[in-house]
Structure formats: C-alpha cells, structure tokens
Length: 217
Ligand code: G3P
Image (cartoon, rainbow, N blue to C red; front, side, top):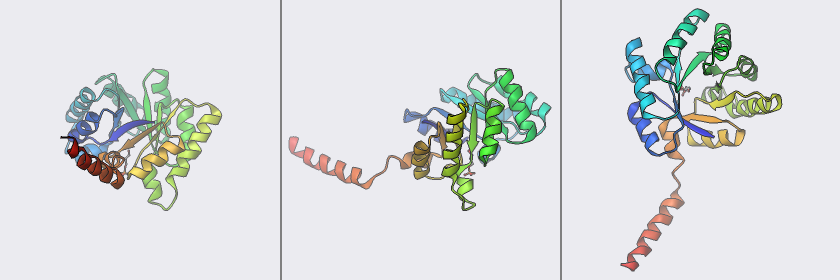
C-alpha cells in the first residue's frame, strides 16, 4: 500500500517526506484554503512547490463543475508538472471529464466517493484513482472500511485497473484497516502516519536496552 499525505501544509509534507516513506500528496480546495493560499496563480505555484518537494503523484483538484471548465482547468493543472493527477468530483460532468482525460492520456483521481456504484462508474470512465471518504462515512454511523472492502472485491472480480485511494483518514487504525481491506493507497494526515510509530512497549524496551548498554562503557 502506498502512503500519500493529505495536506497542503509544506512543513508537514517535508516532515513526512523526510521519513522516506512518502509516495505522493493529495490536496483539495479546503486544504488549500486552510493554508491561506488564494487565487489561481498562488494555487498553481503551491502545486509546483509540492511537486518539487515530493517525487510522487500530487492530486490537484478542479473547481469547475461543468465539462468544459474541468477540461480547461485539468489541462492547465497538467502543465504545472508531470506528476500532477487531476482530481475530479464524482458528478455527471466529472465522469464525462474523466473519460476525456483518460482518452487523452491524463491521469485522474475521482473524489468524493461514498458508494460502490460511484466507484464502478469512475473505474468505467478510466479513473487512475478513486477516493472513498472513509472518515466521513464513519461520521454517519456507517462503516467506511466496509466500502473499501467492497470496492476492492469488485475491482478484483471485474479486473478494473483503477486504484483505491482511501481518503478522509482520521487515525492510525484507519491506516491499518485500509491495508487489511485492500486499499492501494492511503492518504493520511501527518499525525495518523506518526501514530503508527508509537507503542509503549517499544519505549519501555528501548529504555531498558539503553540502560543495560551503559555497562558496556
Ligand atoms: O482526502 C479527503 C480529506 O481531505 C477529507 O478529510 O477529514 O475533511 O473528511 P476530512
């Protein structure tokens, strides 16, 4: 399973990248706004900076909701860097746009996936990635992991090449469950990635090793 970081915060991207395990970055308009990035030029410059920092796919989301607007935006985003993946919402014009991008060799991430039916449609259109929003499903008292499992089973049975990019990750357990469920990629906040490091028995064990090592010198 690949690890992406789900943020537009450059310090967090750097910290995750420095671990050596980062495979890519996802962003969305909310994450950009959180960093105070305003205006097309500033947004495009921010994507360029991220692409220079991380050697992996960087999802950049269109904000148009009509076919022509999405195509124009997607082409412009693509011109920023070869690692840009155009992120398109799961709406009717979005599916048409994903098919157009696929036919023209442009990679896509179909976002805001909340059902297996949506994931099938995105795969039919040739999306490179689908992004089921795990945490937001959990927020409605349904089990987001079950959707990841269902999509993984359908894609395997039907031999779809679209990759499952589990999004809206809220904690470290989500990451482990996504790995079990067959997600190809997990895009996570930095805290959830760092949470995988922690175990009290590791800390206790290391403290004992270091204490015992004092007898060597
Ligand atoms: O990748 C999608 C993600 O940014 C949404 O996360 O926590 O707002 O549901 P959240």
